[in-house]
Amino acid sequence: MDEWSVRKCLLKGKDNPTSFFMIEAPKLIDPFARAITYLRVSVTDRCDFRCVYCMSENMTFLPKKELLTIEELDRLCTAFVEQGVRKLRITGGEPLVRRGIMDYFHGMQRHIKSGKLDEITLTTNGSQLRRFAGELVECGVKRVNISLDTLDEKKFKEITRWGRLAQVLDGIDAAQEAGLRVKINVVALKGENEDELETIVEWCANRGMDLTFIEVMPMGDLGNENRLDQYWSLSDLTQRLEKTWSLTELSENSGGPARYFRVNETGQKIGFITPLTHNFCENCNRVRLTCKGQLFQCLGQENEADLRKVLRDNPDNDLPLEKAIHAAVAKKPKGHDFDYSRQKVVGTVSRHMNHTGG
Image (cartoon, rainbow, N blue to C red):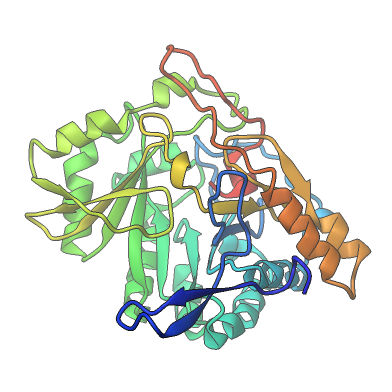
């Protein structure tokens, strides 16, 4: 049995020391003994919005020939599932503007039915959910994260440049009507949505939605603003929240970087993703696949592996692909270098957020 074969561990039964049971050992282990069980997949770099913290207004997108086909996305993600990945999150760009994307979801459903995959989830701006929410549920998707940074129509237009708030709110309605569990992602933007903090929390509570606040990250040359002017520390935001509500920290782990709290007065769950004020790297269990087949081992580092070439050079043999995945994970760094603490932006990466999907 070679190193790419399924490995098993024998453990003594907890209640009966003479009995044994079998569990499958993690297959993808990075240099810091972290099991990689979570793959984020950017299926397109295109988006129908132009959010100010994500991309410039006049973006140049990848030519079609550089993108992984739907069939190649399936094959690559299946290789990760076979190597122990239990969770897929589909991102972009805006994933639902990718032509044929529902074929991908229908295909990946087989891994949920087989039990090899725990869940497949989606991060979206919500603009296309009226069209696709029902079909996503049919494909086994149970929850979605929707990016929404403001409930003010004027500010929404300023932040997204091209977006329409009414379309997103209708998409949220459609998602909940279809039975999807919705979580709202809010990027904390100093001077933009500070005054809406309490309003957004209450609005989510009234709709039965959890939410996560995210610190803005220094990714890509946007050409139009100072990152320090955008940055709002979530430590300050948390102090604001505690003036209105009482928070209880939760021990649960969703497999992502957020720390979660229960708002005792509303019962909802609030997450905080704090790459700047509270580095989340020590428990990182994820890698990121771009729409052109680059595997980024860390959101905040430039090192990557070209899996598209391996995939296309070996159309009928997955062993080289499996070996390439293991080799890439073996180079995963300990953490990112994002830093605003010295009143300058440190640890930036050149690619835009839409390239790796956050």
